[in-house]
Length: 332
Image (cartoon, rainbow, N blue to C red; front, side, top):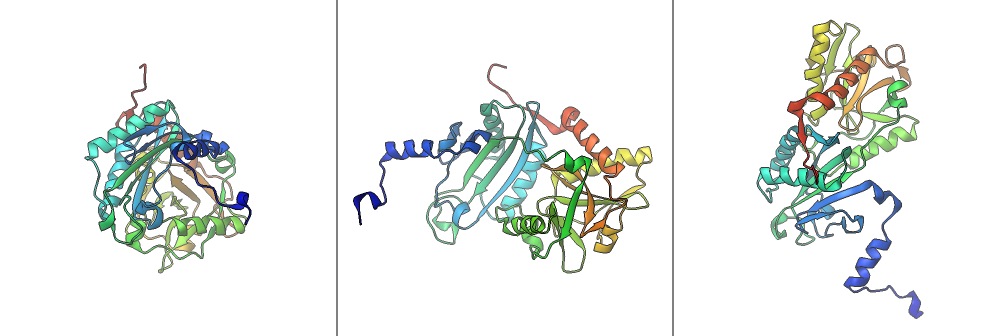
């Protein structure tokens, strides 16, 4: 073997230089990261890394959640944190710090990013310490936060609507569906399957033929009798955005646009026969579905309730003081 064919080894300085050289163009979308392993925040994407022996990496023993940074304020941070804590308890991962400190770290990382509009994601892991299965080897749980470019979907999602297909991917068992863990392989496969079929996303159907959820979004309907319908949350993830949407939808009941809001089993055929269908989530917001398995939903065009709910959400993210947490940027 020639000398230049050997795998190189680097000292610390060379490794740091290599990390910087390896930063790809898309890393410009990563603004700030907190790592409990480092004990602080970095804004250089070259150091937005985590240990390979962290159980989040090789065992998936971790949970995560999100928030939105809009106009310099964090939208629904506390509501997302509540779900994060439920996931942590279900996954049996202890908190490395009190909840108040975790919350402050998220706020401080948002401030360090300097961005007023961005996406926020944070993880709790069993932590580093080895490559075994059980977390007893871990030196302690770890916490990570990243602030990155705001997630936006094409305007066509809202003006023209989405196409979905029924997924053949096995749905997660109820317990695992309710934990927001980093095991998103089924979710990824749902999306890939939909793309292969020329659709935008897929829909999980449970073992009883009832509608469950989409890849990483909730699924809601408006019946021809103007009732807002949604599946129960006992076997799917409880979406923070759709929970808020239930509250906002009450305005449409009061105005007469909707007759009622009901949570309960929705058979697949009932969903396909609805006047409107929509995908709901913190990234997609409220996006109308106009076709399912090649069959038009309603008249095959985005419906008025989806549009009005999106307008209510956009107003909420600007004005709902009980849903917003101010970020203390430097110099303010």
